[in-house]
Length: 313
Image (tube, rainbow, N blue to C red; front, side):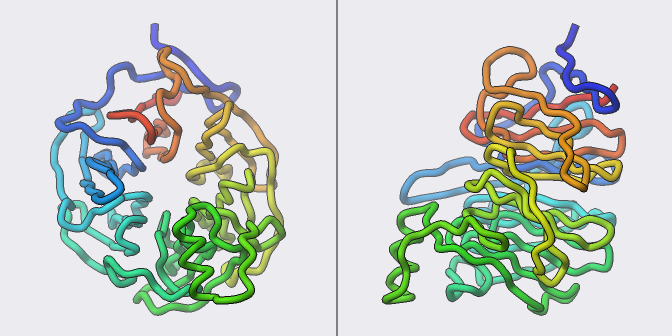
């Protein structure tokens, strides 16, 4: 019998052997459209000199049905799909955010692909892009600066917020120091409204913005203008999140990798660990999605072809 996980209203059973991978690669993130097709951001090669990626599409049974996006991908990071089945891809390698239809047709580009934006501006290694219900676009811009950006539905920049020096990557810190010249100390931001690698952004129906502040082991909550509201701690290395049934599911790097949290910050369930047994994680849980059947998908970095499906019971 397949392994079972979770408790109370959020119990899942592992779908063993799901995913007929046609290539080698690392699953960075996963999202599912209204037809049940599963889109996976895959890193096919990463060296100090070169990065490549692609988008793989599986059906609900795990059969590969399509592949596209190689010409756009460097280090694909975050995927998100809206109600019109439009796909947002944040690529941390080429500093761009793009929107596609499900066939891979490019619909919109934010940022200048292949170029770092000025410090404090879009983009410097973005991690995820999502929309609010009224179409505004929110982007976490996390590896080379600690910012969140908001745009209108046409892609016009509205506001940016977040503080903290970009110390996660040494090369980012060195570049930041050379740009700022004098005052940079190499100090991570730990206070309210400060970040140390904002790794994901998620927006609820009231347009509250939840930022997974990974290196600070917390989620911070803001209004849509970037006004700090509150935070939740005790989330070890949060990487990605989705809202389900008025709660938020978070995938994190630490023990208890899958968390279900109420929107007031109460942890309702916590399960998952690294390992080679069924339902454990060979890599580091990095992307999460819940489909229309309430089935759960988890993408893992740090391991080849590491993507698991858990059916909701």
